[in-house]
Amino acid sequence: MPSKPNSRGGRAARSFALGAIAAVALAGCQSTGRGPATTGSLRPTGTLVTSDLSQQNALAAVQTWGAAYGKNEKDQRAALNYAAALRAAGQTSQAVAVMRKAVILHPSDRTVLAAFGKALAEDGQFREALSVVQRAQQRDHPDWQLLATEGAILDSLGDNNGARERYSQALVLAPGEPQVLNNLAMSYVLGRDLQKAEATLRQALASPKATTRVRQNLALVLTLQGKGSEAQAFVSGGSPSGQAGANMDYLQGMVAQPNTWADLKKES
Image 1 (cartoon, rainbow, N blue to C red):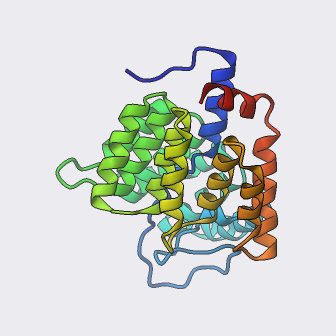
Image 2 (image 1 turned 90 degrees about the vertical axis):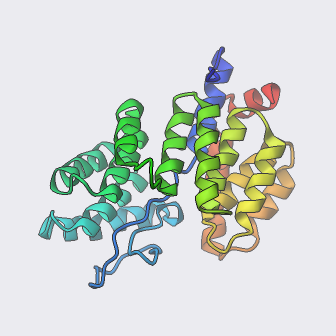
């Protein structure tokens, strides 16, 4: 049975943990062409790593990829990156609109369908998001990224057990993948299992592919366990000064959410 919050405090705690879940980053299409210059790191596939974008860089990426998309709305890479930048900037409804049009242009493309599902989920349209992601999946040849995205959506719907099943399936296909481990760890936070969440995030961070969000979420989990000094040292060390500042801003912003920390500590 899915776990359901049964109190105002439980709802606040869920809001915290769901906000901290970074839905697994989706691979974009391969591109041999040169894309526009952009602020923020790119994967080998040419798609944005949105968890590493500051708000300022996200807004810059919106301008850059918005211009590319405006020149050619059929450009799949431009659509994916424009939608990703919009999500990073908090413009989730517009990201949904961009990806909805992309699905019309590329109705059978799994990457586009998955990105559409992710945009829907980040806009709070979880039921439609789940339907879209499941439609994109091929059960005889499953994609780990789609499984992980489905897991994040199930967590958002309160089905933590179902979510963890999807993460486990994804990790069979992509062992040690830090983006999947990150979401699995935050699912443990939803279940108040902070020790397991910490261990899973440390495992994720050991990968050279781990993003900034993994480090940030580990700091959050450390703070939940009363390890505030370790958390602050953690986000301040091992990162360039600008990124360390962004890490601290993220941590302080989550700490500032009313009642969240007390509720999670009380119920863990």
